Amino acid sequence: MSASASRRFAMLPYAAPETRRPLVSFEFFPPKTAEMEERLWAAVKRLEPLAPRFVSVTYGAGGSTRERTHNTVRRILRESSLTPAAHLTCVGATRAEVDEVARAYWDSGVRHIVALRGDSPEGAGRYQPHPGGYPYAVDLVAGLRKIGEFEVSVAAYPETHPDAANPGADLDNLKRKIDAGATRAITQYFFEGHAFLDFLERARKAGITVPIVPGILPVTNFQQVVKFSAACGAAVPPWLARLFDGLDGDPETRRLVAATVAAEQCRLLQANGINEFHFYTLNRADLAYAICHVLGLRPVNAASAAP
Image 1: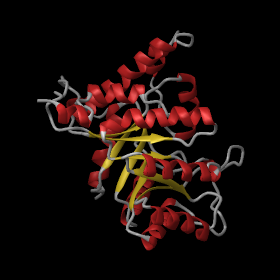
Image 2 (image 1 turned 90 degrees about the vertical axis):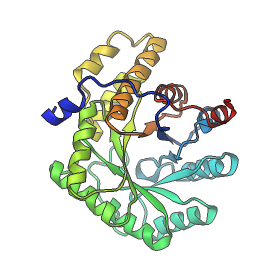
Image 3 (image 1 turned 45 degrees about the vertical axis):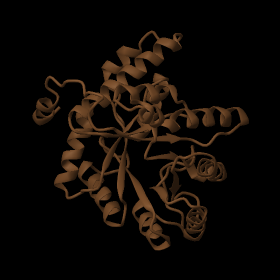
């Protein structure tokens, strides 16, 4: 931890619920089965009263969930008050095919795209651009700008993308995406608050002025997080392993620990002036809802009904 970060974290008080309302967004993934769709929709309806800025729907590796993503986005748009943001990647499609998807979203009323390079399908090895597609996210952002006035979010990596040559090159890539027309960056999850604060400081010094929103992942399956973190470049600190040690057969305690860790992570960021958070829900609402409550967020209907 840098000295400046250490000073920022000294003796931080809890943010009072009376302070300005936190801004939140939630990420879902498209369901594979009817049972999973029911669980997803229960999560959507549970989180809807919190009035998030938007909810995003992921796009599988290699475009493997393309139709399910489209169907989920359209249902959210049609059957809820939420604003959906559709993930769109460069993988496995030509520019014309990607443009067709983007135009279909625009025509259906979707105005927010999360533009990503995307990952190759499992077992396909290192990412290779599609011969006739958008090579990288910066190219996709520029292409979307030619189609419509989308709000475009892109990914950022506080601990550096695993394919980047170094942190400086990774930050340069983020700057290119912003210069191409992206309006927001959402970070990969992280567990050490200073990783985000130091990254934010470097980004501002590099001239990146758009909102950079921390991505928060409540950990419900520690071993799965370890595996995924190795692939995406997120560090798993030893203290996190110690917290989940011995809880493999105790799901109730795991959930309580997960909520506590994520809430404390957000609280520290909030006390340092960060008031917007993006939650990776894994299609479960309980942890995200509890964490939002700790941060001072209340259902809009309940707030409006209060005397």
